[in-house]
Amino acid sequence: MPAAGAPQVLSSKGRQTREAIEQAARRLFAEHGFHGTTLADITSAAGKSSAVFYRYFTDKEDLLAVLAESFLHDVVTPSGLSLSLPDSPDDDAFFTSVVTGYWNIFKQNIGIMIAVAQLAATQRRFADVQNEFRRFGIEIVAASVRRAQEQGFGSRLDPAHTAAAIALLFENFTTVFGGASGIESLGIEISDEDAIKTLATVWKKTLYGEQGDQ
Image: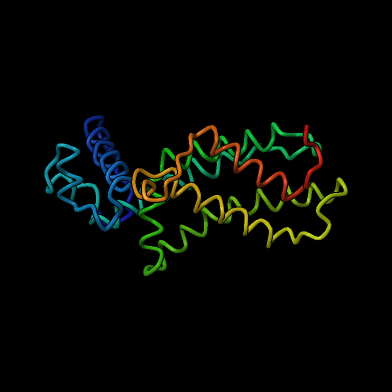
């Protein structure tokens, strides 16, 4: 069995097997959370045996760590590399496009986010990964605050504090309304379109107030 995190040279069949295990874990973590998903659940959903699982991962936490690191470095970080900033208070397209990208990426990977959040409370390595996710969002929002201030708006806003507040609001909102369970008891239904519009509006109005409203 390879050491945790050790690179593996996989055959085409091996890649397919590993991908089946990872996809099953993503779905089950989204539906039941990390603690509500057993290793047997994952292998059964993937159509694989536990012996096959251990060829690729040391345990369920190792699997989550691999998924989280891959999500962070292969999906989250590249998504912000060419990001522009709002041109003016009327630049609705900036807020809508960024929030749409954020919503779609995180909703598609909500199982990883939920599982990481559950383990972050007690395990430092997952808390560190969670904070890497958060720093990505905070840096983007902080840059948008500074841009608004260059344009003469939001002079009383502290970029770092405002960015942390908005990024954490996004995180919790997405976890609740982007997940597969737990929202029925709230009595609130929201479509993807309305969720994106709500988050984009909150972000924009925090920076520009009523400026740019049509």
